[in-house]
Image 1 (cartoon, helix red, strand yellow):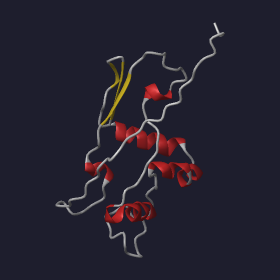
Image 2 (cartoon, one colour):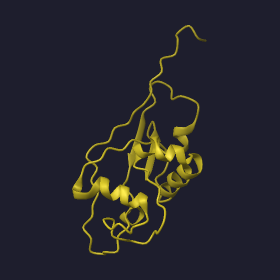
Image 3 (cartoon, rainbow, N blue to C red):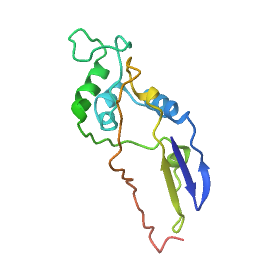
Image 4 (cartoon, rainbow, N blue to C red):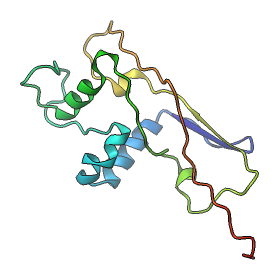
Length: 145
């Protein structure tokens, strides 16, 4: 989830629907070409085939998106992801004025949203080691009135 505040005033409150919003925005906005190229930076590998929990190491597994994600994270490998913030305030064409304090708070979703696992006692965890926000800073020409 994502909560955004400007100068201490909450603009966007974190809800459990954020996960679904970001998924639906991505799947309806981008083409399959985008999914196969720059969306992989956000760890976007679309599920296809059989969606039931399965053994990803088996040759008979038909869900190629799941197998790709599993291969990239098996044995606790660190991965780096880069993606956009799915919030209305991040999609407006206007810029923030100088001196406006922007605060963004991220909360990890419940594991049931992002894990496919039949083992209830599984100790699968995700740990965020670092987060960075990339922002374009624009300095307007002082001669513009």
